Image 1 (cartoon, rainbow, N blue to C red):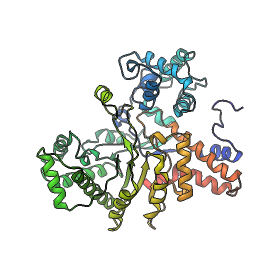
Image 2: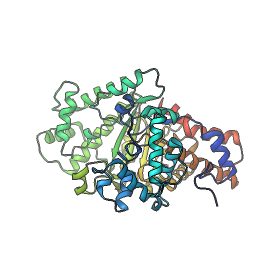
Image 3: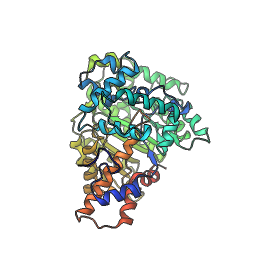
Image 4: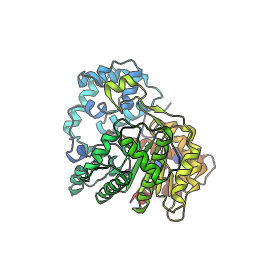
Length: 465
């Protein structure tokens, strides 16, 4: 029987251990997609206790606590920070098989030097030790980044953001990690949202104009994109809950846009046309600026209307959608590629049924300009666990080139989540180690080590910079 989460955690062969300890473990972290607030990095946010770090913004943990029957008071409510920590600790032993159990204990080990398993019995002692470490080791936002050996952070930002906190961070010569914005114009595409017109008004104000035509919208979006680029942005992101493709003319889309601004209802067909045309128009802008486009596909958001009304979005009430994606996604990519304006693109699927779809889709649009121009992104959200990562790695290696993969990201709001890179690296090394141990790949440690180091860091650095 192996010791719980020891130094060889998840490493089942000698080759896996050699790859992880000698090649993966010390590579820097290039975290190209997350939801960390730039303001907290700029102001070097400090914390009073472990709950503020661990539970304030972690909807993964919130979902588990609700499933355990814990009252919302101890999740997003007004209970004390210790009470929230204690309720979470009581649940921990029951999380067998859940990735939160691994993530949480990796975080306790790496940042607080706590080796014991968290439970109701150990809660008070671990609470005190973690809080002491926060003070003693000065575990602020920037210190956590430094401890984690993070050299690049890509945040996720709305076009209306003024990016002042990104500038403050990057003007500080004493802080070595780059913190760059990513352009995420979802609210400008989702014409069906109730706040769409209000958002368009806010967007116009960022450029001291009133947007009353579709051409005016594209002009403002392009200006905001250039503003982001001037502030170091070279990555964009879109959340495509469903993938739509409905060709339309500029005249049609212009009429649809004006119709919405006038307060009129739009049909589903009109919505599809607007979203299709706008996404392709933005893709061309990204290509011209040599940016990377990320498409996150398949989330079914805000399922619980009652709880959405109580606690809002991004609070743990989203799930996996099961829509068809292949044809529409193919047509979107082809519409850009046919004009040679398809930017470097990363495709993520939330439903694992689509792994092979994306694994084969990326091969349709590769090119000689850059190896791995179109990427199958890492196991995302509900796939951000052992089996999900393994499934993604297997699909990518069997249908594409895992050696050119840009690797892991946190997609998190927590400064403690950088341990997910360690989790991924251990799973990666174990997968490759199994191939060698089973005689499916030669024991060429120089080549294997290079592949591991590339996937952990080098590929992303080259791809994004």
